[in-house]
Image 1 (spheres, one colour):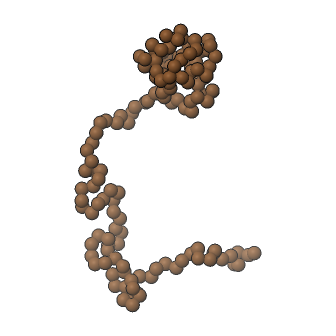
Image 2: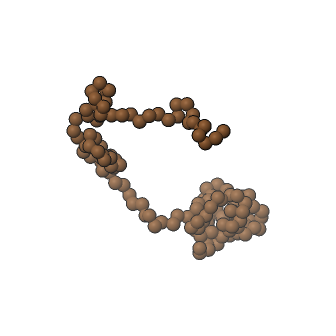
Image 3: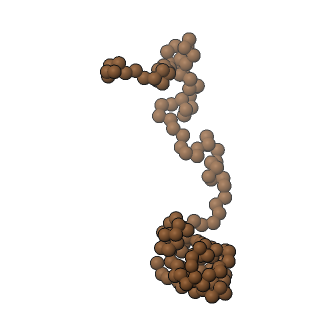
Length: 148
């Protein structure tokens, strides 16, 4: 096969539709764009969310709450995650990542009181909920707050 023998696959390239070639062509005169208006002009492109002058959906919906774009949210875990470790273990973010119990932890770890803890371990995290601290101490374990 040589370069001059190459051809595109059948029906893969279609000729451009030639508009403005007389009324008999079906797309002559106004070229399928109708009469006047923005869409008949060259270079027309509607802005995102534009609804033809009607109030756009984004502006019709009420604004609720506040979203802090600078927030650094903690990764949260429940107490039941820590039952995978041996008694007497000291558990930090690195141990959770190494065990595959967390995929990533960018800004710190917060332990919530979901589930039950039945091990005597030391948990080192950036934050604990009040309920988590109570359950950890009830199980005879320790909760240590570390700064990131």
